[in-house]
Image 1 (cartoon, one colour):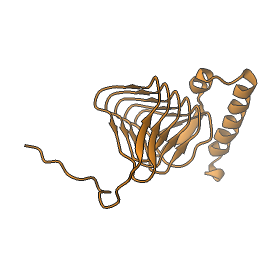
Image 2 (cartoon, rainbow, N blue to C red; image 1 turned 90 degrees about the vertical axis):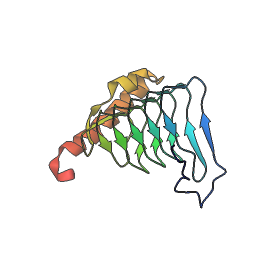
Image 3 (spheres, rainbow, N blue to C red; image 1 turned 60 degrees about the vertical axis):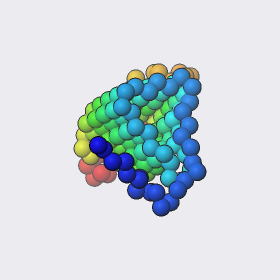
Amino acid sequence: MAQMTEPDWKDHPSNGKVFIGTGTIIREAVIINKPTQTSTIIGCDCYLMNRCFIGHDSMIGNNVTLSPGCSIAGFVKIGDYSCVGMNASVHQHSKLGNYCMVGANSFFKGISPDGITWGGVPAKPIKVNEVGINRSKLTDIEKLHVREDAELFINFFQNPSNV
């Protein structure tokens, strides 16, 4: 018979709660950790596919897709209309902007501005995430500004002296 164990933070109990927005779909074997400090928040209209892991005290925006087997560590923030690919990982305390994508099997650590597609281990900015931007409810001019800013960010990283 399996034995239940206490979580690592049992000596620091939290009165925090898990909040899940309306319209969010949670598939099989998804794990959402109880917060250690304040709350774990999952926005509205998200799609959490099978075997996702969401760490404690994370904040997942609205219309976010978490693909099968991805892992979101504790204290992570993921912006609206972003997507984390199959078996990808996001390191603790990282922040993904709105309309971002972390490619399958990638490892993201750090802070990302809006509209970037990341890939690799460690993840590097690859291109503008047109899919995320186009799914958003931004106006055409707002989408243009996000694309321009994302392209500047990516171009900065393509120069080896800047990395």
